[in-house]
Image 1 (cartoon, rainbow, N blue to C red):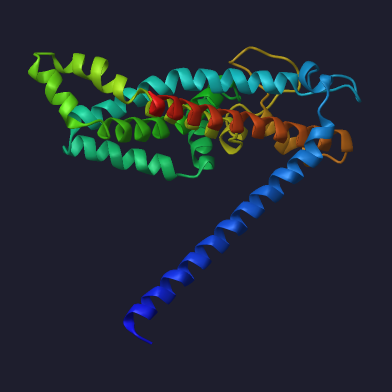
Image 2 (image 1 turned 60 degrees about the vertical axis):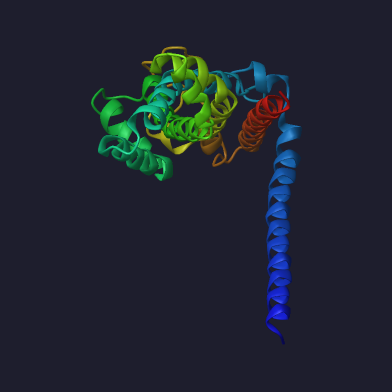
Length: 279
């Protein structure tokens, strides 16, 4: 067999292998989604969205868990996203390759790849154990730490993709650095930064381990962030182990709600990028 034919055979073989593996991955994903919809959709009802977890048997729902998750994820995003954007901007526009910037990148990469349960244990030791109780504030801290490294990486990468000629043109016109960053760089990278925030929010919305060690869960309604606050991930984890079938059904319903929420966030992020691309 000639060298050309060997290379052609290898190329065709790798294409077949890659296509086969992609089909297997898609089939597994479709299997998961079909199972989730089959078991979760019939469990959805009006009570699921309007009744709390401690309602009488047969009429209980996930309303307080849904609201609790929304509150904690929203607060974590409000706190962590601006810090992440500023840190990513520093790494891209100011820090360069200094020792400080490289150290921040290394720490951010560690946080980005660290198992979320380690984040939960960290928050437990600094915000739960010293105060002798779980709380919504601890949950917000845990989710904020989950969100932060994603936003930092997305912001730095998006700003690095902005053509250098835009910076040079702005500086040539006499604009100060802060003006270049806010009016030129952030505006040019806006779609990518927003997409990074949405993806970080989607990741945080489905995290269970950090919340088990921080906010835990409450059966009744509560808006007090200094107390245990119910949330969907922990509720799913707890209800999936219950012997009562109605609790298991609610766990499937909660899993479907989270999946649809994450799907909506991913579609929104792609829509933001597509809209910017058309412009």
